[in-house]
Each structure stands twice: as C-alpha cells, then as structure tokens.
Image (cartoon, rainbow over the protein chains, first blue to last red):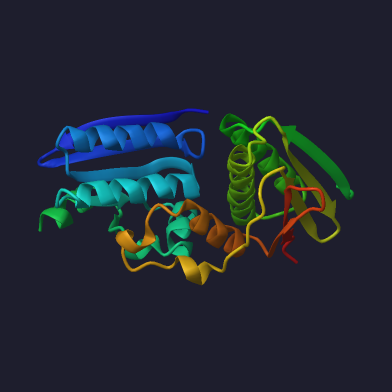
Length: 114
Length: 143
C-alpha cells in the first residue's frame, strides 16, 4: 500500500497532491511532509485529495495537525475534494466547518487569494 | 451466497490494517451490500482495527494479534474486531463536533468514534472478561 505525495508551487501557494490511501500505516508519511513544508516556510497550503482512495480518522488527525501548524504562522490550509465518499468523512466529523473544501486546485487558490 | 463465517488474524501492526480493508470490501460485496455500504464498512472496520492495533500497543500487548471475524447473515453482515487492549467508552458523534481546529485538537479517537457510530447500522464495543475489547459492527443488506 503506497501513499503518493507530490509537492508543487502555484503562485504563493504550495499544493500537495496526495494519491492513494491515508490510514494508520501511511499517515506518518503525510504528517512528516506537512511538518517539513511548514519548517521550510510554506504557510499557505492546498492539499489536493482528488486522487485519495481511502481516508480515515488517522488521516483526518494529520490534516487537523497540519492546519494548526500553518495557523500558528498566520497561514492557511485548504482542501480540494469532490469525492462523495471522502466528503462524507469530513461531514460526519464536523470538519467541513474547519477546512475550506474546494472543487479544484484553481478554485482553492483563487478563493484563498481573494 | 449462503450464510457463513470468515476469520482473519493480523499482527498488531499498522501495515496490516489495509489487508483487512481488502478482505472487508470483498466480503461485503459478496454479502450483497451496495457500493456506498461497502465504502462505509471499509472505513468502519479500518477504524476498529486501527483502534485495536493502537490499543494493544498502549496496553503493552503489541505482540497480541487482532482478530477480525465476518459473519454473513441472511439480512446482512456482522464484523467483530477483538484485541487485548484497554477498555474505552464509545462516545456519541456530538462530542466531536468542533467549531474550530483549536478546540478539536488531534483527537483522532473521538473522530474514530464518530465515524464508527455513523457508518454502520449498529456499533457496540465491550470489554471481555479476562481482558481485551470486542467491537461489533452490524450492517444490513438493502431490501
């Protein structure tokens, strides 16, 4: 089981494209990447979950932790997700009220900039 | 398919939770559950196994296995996840609703409980005499 992470910049944003399954086994890899980005001074982050096949509480915990880290630097974190099965997880846990969730990376960057 | 029982035993290690998800998806489909139910059950079983793996570790029982049994009933599927970990109280989803990330913290366990309570028709967790927890998940086939 693999978790793919690709990091790119778009304007003043860092976009993290996540691919695969985020669970108790793979979540540490995502956590390390998010810590690394913040330590490098990337405080405005978009996490693209469109290619994520599976997400559970472990992945949610990592995303919440990353949000707290960027907020500590007055940064922002937005998510990109249109998949019903993933959105459902955010709704059940009340996290749709914590994260801005967008339909596309372009939309996330546009709205965050505005 | 006729009713039947399948049992899986995995080492208490995070790498094996994905194996249980694969088995869950396959057994849930063959039990006649719809695709959304298959996805829901995969998450619920994954949550229960994750809690068991972490609970075994926390109880110093990392060498003990986690046992997952699937019982196909005429009207659905029952999954039981057993560990040697410490007892806990399942909480209602309301306790996890947060207005901000600061209040929510990294409370993975609270989120896990909310998911378990929401994604299956019934979720019961109880400690067994002699130690360990059993989490029982029930999901009914669509009529």
